[in-house]
Image: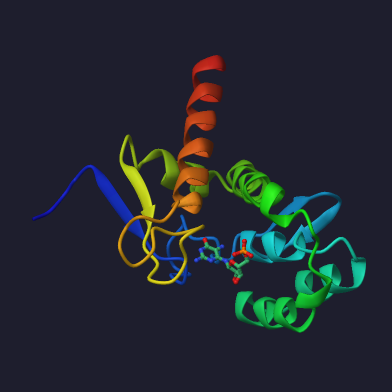
Length: 153
Ligand SMILES: Nc1nc(O)c(N)c(N[C@@H]2O[C@H](COP(=O)(O)O)[C@@H](O)[C@H]2O)n1
C-alpha cells in the first residue's frame, strides 16, 4: 500500500537533490566542498592530510576510497560529532543553492527516511529499525529553513 506520509530516499542517488552525494558545491570552514558527502567524510579526520585528500577527490566514490585508505587515523570522538557535521553540510548547501532548499521544503511534512539495507545509523536498516539519522538531519534542516522563512516574512 502507498504511504504518502513517508518519503524514501537512497544515499547513492546522485540525481536526488536530497542526497548527500549530489554535486552542489558549497563553502564551509574556509574550504570549498564538492558535495556534502565529501565534507562529512573529511570531518572524520582531524589530520589535514586525509581531509585534503578527501576534499579534492573527483567524486564521492573516490572520496570514500580516500576515507578507507586513511581509516586508521579516524578521530576518536566521531560518533559524538557526526550528526552535527552532516547537519552543517546540508544546511550550508541549502543556503548556497536555493534549489536545494526548495526541494527540501517541497517535502512538506513527510517523514524522510533513508532506505539502507546495511546502515543502521544514517539509514533505517534492513528491518526499518535503524536510527535514520540522515533522514532526521534533513527534517531538522527543513524545520530551520521554515523558521527562517517565518522570521523573514
Ligand atoms: N548509508 C549512508 N547514508 C548516508 O547518508 C551517508 N552519508 C553515508 N555515508 C557513509 O557513512 C560512513 C561514514 O560515517 P559513519 O562512520 O558510518 O558514521 C562512510 O562509509 C560513508 O560513505 N552512508
